[in-house]
Image 1 (cartoon, one colour):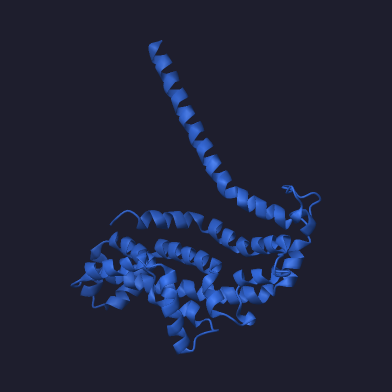
Image 2 (cartoon, one colour):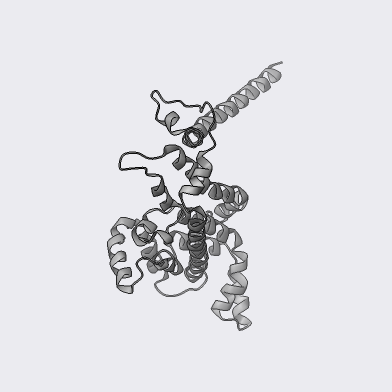
Length: 286
């Protein structure tokens, strides 16, 4: 009898813990979901409904006209092409260069390796705003202003956080792989390209996804370096919804925001499992 009572007690405690965990997760999810739901509601309301006081949270009636308006007001297809070109080259450049540098910090042993690696990681502490003016002066001397080069070329030299991820991933791999290839006469670049890079697929997916999201949402870089409207990216298209100095087409801007966010959400859900797998594999060994 006492054993049955003890089992029931443990079952109640387990159920209570599960319910409390789900309750906390639901509350956290709502905190992140409310802004998205508000943006969707704004995209389905007319300008009058969006400016009414007190606010009308649920659109009544539902107005879908903001979506075709968003596509017509901004040159959506042209800006989408610009964004895909910039982000695509950023992803390719940062994935290859960061993997190569990470390989040099993990598989190849050389004097001063740890000191140089710490120096590279320390650069993450420098805020982007501090580098903004020197970079702008440098790129202006190169004649790269109003071109895609400032938004693409730096990514072919690696990013510290991605170098760190690749280093952690390569440290998990057996050194015998590299030693066997060296005995067979393969060069270090060939070992990297033919042996380690194909095995680094989880880390490549993580880096590609992180850079895709960062590049797609980047507002400051295109705003500074791209003055010609024919070179604008999707994020800069928000400016087209400013009706005058004091008024913005809230519904059109919300619909436009949903259209440019949708590819990011779609890519994330398609790569979610690989992303979590890659994060797990790169976060164990230090």
